[in-house]
Amino acid sequence: MLKRVRLPLQRFLAPIGSALAARGVSPNTVTVVGTLAVVAAALALYPRGELFWGSLVISIFVCLDMVDGALARAAGRTGRWGAFLDSTMDRIADAAIFGGLTWWFADGGHQPWLAGLSLFCLAAAMLVSYTRARAEGLGLRGDVGIAERTERLIVVLVAMGFGDLGVPYLQAIGLWVLAVATAITVVQRVVAVYHQARTGEPAPSPAQPAAPGETHITEAAEAPPVGGPRPRLFAR
Image (tube, rainbow, N blue to C red; front, side, top):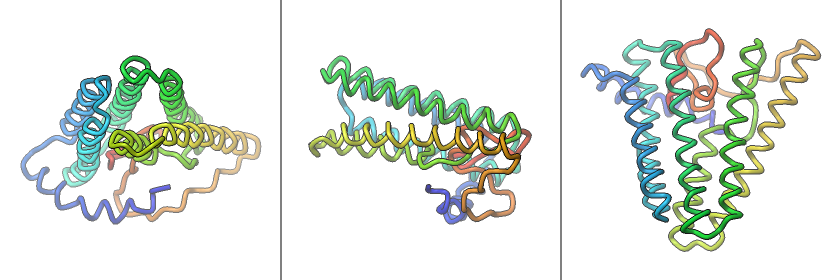
């Protein structure tokens, strides 16, 4: 849904990536450091009920994940290893975020139903990624859907952060919206792959501008195209 902002965002981040590349910074280092920071914030702050501060810190380091894409392009270091690493780091970060939330709601938050909902969101998010990866492993398109990783992160971080500031029911609403949207995305991908497998016709390509050398925004990090370039931005 947010793919339309890819090109303007790439242009905005290009000077930052160029500056870091000139200093010899590795995009893989940025990817790993950003992920470790997200994991640390999610597991140190969320289980203690610090949902606002946890979401704020995570948001900052998620933005760092946008920079490594620009850095990879500026340094000419896109490739399949980077795509694999980025996708793997994304899954680790997602597991930490929803794991930390599940821990809080099940223990200190005393809201077991929200803990279950958070766990469902994690499982569904992993399934979204898997359906795309499996589809592209078969030479089919699997990048359709209303809730890619960027959208999912925005929903959960906004809902948890502002909900912790006292906005009533926002955390529950956010998790419900996320659960439904993620489940719909899984169904959309299954249907798209079924259609392609039955008819041999490719699924409609999501409307998005293309730029020379551009790589995926976020969802591509979930599952890079087989044999394709390193997905990066949100680095993916």
